[in-house]
Image (cartoon, one colour):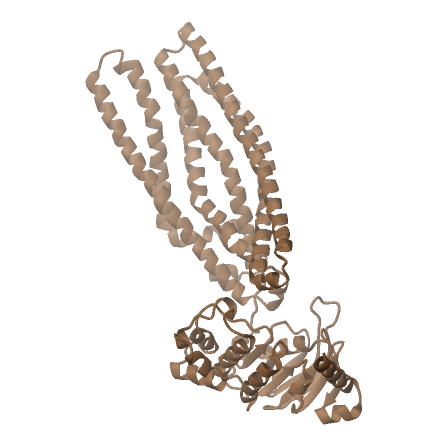
Length: 589
């Protein structure tokens, strides 16, 4: 799987799909053999019926009738066993293939760059991971066996019909083009509607994921009716397109049934005339009538299989679309770094998300190891983008960033990020316990290391006050915790990681003053001995920074210490005075 998914250029979808059968070759071969036996057993009943009607019954051959009946039961037992194997082992094979694809997709998603997630909704990706791969697994299991069984039964039953009466067989065969034309027309309408309904399913997933994640905001604004309206819009779209698909399916089913029934009527009339003329006896006519379904049913199944094929192919194409997304890759000369001193240097760095409007322009900054540099300015100025370029969250195309004079392009992504700690305003915590979330900073950490990190982040005492201590569940995204507790938990995670470079992106801007003071103590401890970049909104928190850089419109407008910038009387002083004016006004309210 790994080699396949890393290939360059356009994939051969068929070869790529077939590659997932390789680990299950034995099961697949046995499944096809079981399908062959299953199909052969299906031909015995009309053959035995013909023999009984033409020979055994007219001649009163009781023993032969009993023996054939017992033999028929034996055949049905074999057929039931084959059916069991096809449905059980075949489905398990399909599920294992689905699991392999899901595993490959999850692995691939982990390696995709930030830019991919900027442009793709979580719900849509979940739909590809679940709904689409389910249709692929159904195709993987049912596709080959349906194709094999139906094709074998069509050929086998037609040959058998010809042995009874070739003229009647040709009459049946003449209906085949009509059946195909009726099916193709209905299938085209059906496929278009099913494709659209699949997209609507993705939209429903996206809306649902978004609404559930933001349920507390919804309740706070009493906007449940608005969310319901958004959901119903997608839900109604799904119903509309699914209804169109089922309408086409209904036309297909009704047309196929009508065509089959007309075929039976024509054969009955023609066969009756043949019997009158002596060209056919009654036993053969009955056997022929029983055998028509052996020919028509697999034709219908084969035509209906095109729906499953369409669903599976579309699902696989959507899967491959993601798998073909270019992953983050290290350069050929990239190497691991162990524990850098933390000297960071930006040299002529410019950056654009879309290749047009530049978010950063000619940034040159030299941050000595162990120093604290703060970045301030209006929202959208490029501060966070500047920090996100250091761990290579986005590909740098103009200029270069150096860590200890080594270009980041020559440092492996994994080792670079292992040495960078990030504390953001919007803390993401995983569903689980305090221990699991702290240990995310170093998955092999000992209990002592976890407790030490919690103590340094000033959250150990709170954790120990809980009945289950470090085994306490924090809820989805830490919903059971306050904002300050979430931040201190994320700080503990970084303490455990022990990075050389620290990025604090508006880490305390969402906290109240009392909580901010508490978190600031933890952050102050965290910054000791580390190169620290602080993106700050509250200027009071960065007074002691070694250098403050004002970023406006993607460019550096001012730089210096807090005191120097106030004395210069530029943008920083205006920001500082405006913030304190707001603070004073807020106190008067």
